[in-house]
Length: 290
Image (tube, rainbow, N blue to C red; front, side, top):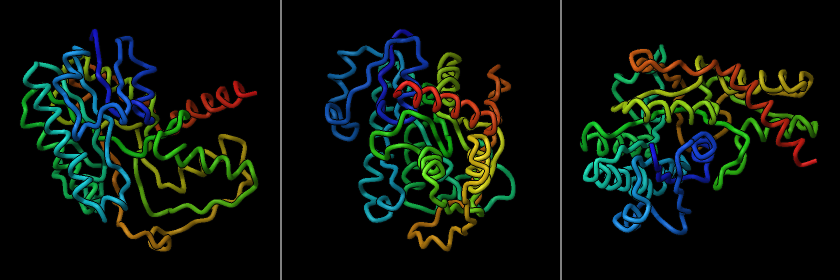
């Protein structure tokens, strides 16, 4: 790779890709280039990328339910126009998708070959984006991931859940966490390195990329508290139904990777090891602030 255009570079994944990439990365701000309406011809003529990575998304799940047209405009139609523009120029196109493409009713982790059955407008818009992108040929790579966390913060959401709950524990505040939703946590720097590995191998099609293993959100936070030295922090069990959330998330959505071995890519570390890496990076960030 000699050049990457990266959309959504201010988020967890985009920031990690910029940190991990040895190639030159051009990452326009949303205010400078909107993937729904921006002039792709002008951008590509200026940047001349070998690879385009799309981390931009309409990902507020509840807002997607109330405004599905905006969700589909960003997560499907814009993805299609980017994939088409890349195919016309023989540029590899990578776009990030989600475990929300599945219903969450399986009894084993979802594989790349499993049929999507989204239960939300967000999930449906991301499935539509996958199908629309894949029709543009073998230069398209879909990366499905889940529960991304890191230390850099997100331009629209702020810090991720684990960062927020650690702050609550440090302030002595109780934390309530669901114990009936199971997923695959994913550390953004590990995900970024895997995405770059896929690009370097010209890997096409759909790939599940998460840290190995799965847990409930309660187990995830409990482990983070224990590792961070907050074993006495108050963590209260809760059911998803008790939260009164208007949107039904997938209750079981771990993702299984079945493609890396054939590509010669090592699987990502376990989510437990990922928490260790996160806590080391968090400690360094806090120390740098004095």
